Amino acid sequence: MFKKKIISLIILSLLISSCGDTWGSVKRGLTGQKEKSTDEFMIQRKDPLILPPDFTNLPTPSDRETAKEELLIFEKSLKKNSSTENTSKSSSTEESILEQIKKN
Image (cartoon, rainbow, N blue to C red):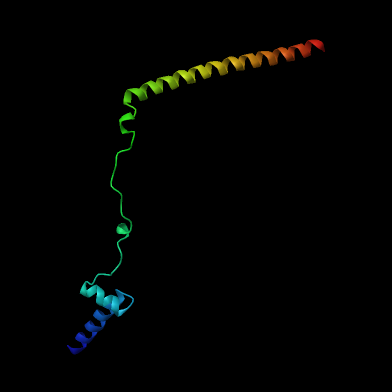
């Protein structure tokens, strides 16, 4: 009976000591003592929220739609210009090649 108590005390002390690296940490864990540290969120004071100066001049959703339409029209005109330039370049290139062939 006495041996069982000694063995259980040894096992209990091993379990408690394995929970922390020192006896001080075990004591803090058993007593529930909090570690004193600074709060990282309270270091800087936060400014109050304010409205931007041009809040009344923000674009509306309808303005955004018209801007998208204008962008699409611009892209289409660019595609048309680039396609006409490509055909003119290719035709002029073809013509120059044909002229050189005819000379030979």
